[in-house]
Amino acid sequence: MNFHVLTLFPEMVESGLHTSILKRAMDRDLIHLSCINIRDYTENRHGRVDDYTYGGGAGMLMQAQPVFDACEAVQKSLPAPARVVYLTPQGALFTQEMAADFAKEEDLILLCGHYEGIDERALEAIHAEVVSVGDYVLTGGELPAMIVVDAVSRLVPGVLGNDESAETDSFQNGLLEYPQYSRPESWQGRDVPEVLLSGDHKKVSEWRLAQSLARTRERRPDLYEAYLEKMRQTPMTPAEKRRFARILRESEE
Ligand code: ADE
Image (cartoon, rainbow, N blue to C red):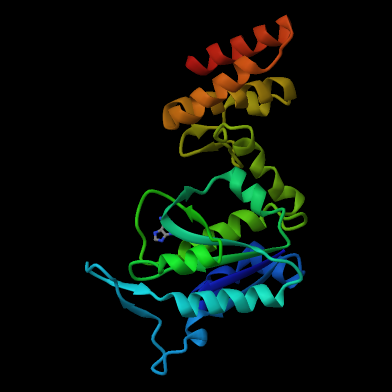
């Protein structure tokens, strides 16, 4: 999969993503990252890419021309038109589901804004989808673009090794991950929960589900309610229903 990041700070995105798992994935040609400097496309002879906003108000806006031309140049280099994602706090909240949807693409263009944002006409002309990484305001779209590249890349087949891939399972069933423990069995007087040492796989998976339920209820009541609703809609045999009710009770203890 190919990510094309349009930004005024290409070195920030490059350096942030060329480490660890993503670096390995790039070295193996599973993903490819190209960062395009929007400033290289300005027709302004002083290299300017921003100007004051019509109607007044504080701050500068990125102008339509360099943004549009940079995006067009990328689109023209591709075999088929790619989706364009503009990172902005005004966008729809980025979710695991969105990441999975983007991971189906061969090419994805990510557009990073700066200053007060980008002239609306450029966003219309390039048919940008708008995505936010959270309800807070950052100084630019570079960190959000890096978040999207990371979350999408780990869903590209082969990017995660077998040891790493299990991580997705918990979020993908709509619950938060259960607590995990490694050696030693006892550390600073704190013991690993007994059941995890039992070797009883059924008991372990029921304990983990109960822990996930408790944690999600406590930390993310919104996800918890959605999960219960999903379970109510899921056809279950009487035995399955009793089992789920028992685990749910255990999660409340
Ligand atoms: N740019 C600035 N803040 C942002 C946010 N929260 N999400 C996406 N892009 C942004």
